[in-house]
Length: 191
Image 1 (tube, rainbow, N blue to C red):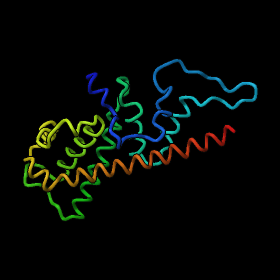
Image 2: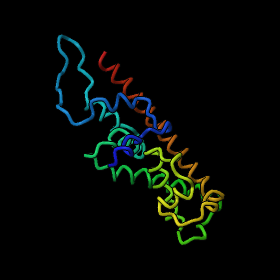
Image 3: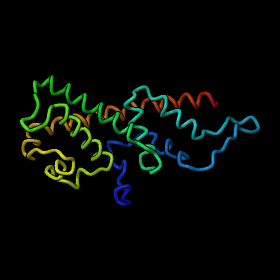
Image 4: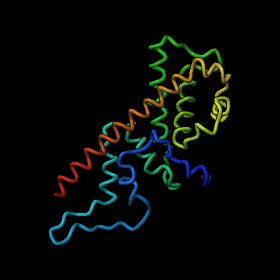
């Protein structure tokens, strides 16, 4: 991955996890420490506890997004499944929003599903790498392989991009709540 691009990974304020530093600390590839507490002290919180915090996130899509945010900048982590889970969730929600709005497929060559998938992929990618300020609407569409005029996108479809960003906010809220509950229960168990 390009070094400059990797420095932008998960820097969007929208993707800030309440316990992100706690989750990431000690989760890299290094020697595992199996201390179980000494002299009556509770065991040290380790990488297994932090992985469990992610594993116990109730929402499958939330778990996928949390995995992306914690391990996505590690070049040894294959994040394609997590990325696809989040994209499929965002695309399905967009289709639901379009049906609620009586918005049919665009007049371009895409079905509604194809456009929703391409837009979800673009939205997640641009959010993960905080690329929004670097590209114009036309540049985003070109970069993402969406063959549509910037004016059509801005006038009709950009509100669904905004809804996807709102859905990501919503997922971050679930992640924060579940990890906060896990940490609270871990503290109670170790006291």
